[in-house]
Length: 236
Image (cartoon, rainbow, N blue to C red; front, side, top):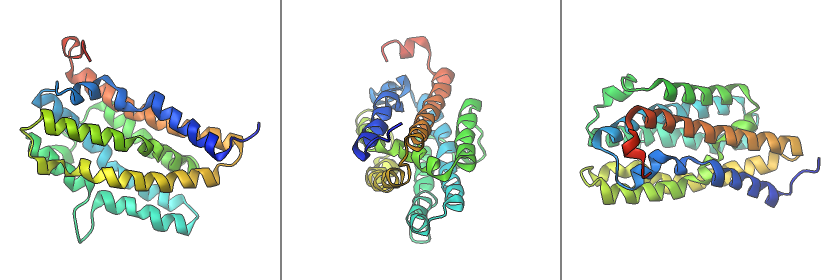
């Protein structure tokens, strides 16, 4: 099979997000419309934290398997972004602050007290995927960040409009991703375009991105079915 050109390959990857990214999930539609209760929002924040705290673990695994030093030198920034450094807090600390602002104590997140089995299964499957598949497919799976800035901008606006009981300063995580995600996307997409040059390699990269989209969707499915009644979701 003839490989796709770089432009064709890029469009194939973008089309996956347009069709499958979790911004279209009913739970997100309820969130963005301001229709979640405090308890529903707390459950989402608590369960999403399991994903947040596993992202630097996933990235550390990818670093350990990537043979290219130049890629490692840039990719390690993602770990700093989430874990934080001596000079400032990272995404995990910012998420704990968000949780506190919604009324969830940090220890409830850190000990997985509210974690749903479906969310644990999906996130663990993502870490295992990066651990076991070729490293460049792990990079391809990260390309959901192609679609993240729009989701974050919409989410931030929704929180500021509808959930005014949350301290605006606690929304720092969402604001930080507006700049971090495009930077990470440019780097990750360049890696995939440079290293996936045969049609089979390109198709495996596309499959990795579809897999990641499905995992994000599955997390929201678990949360949605736990706390949203048919009446809540009827107009979603």
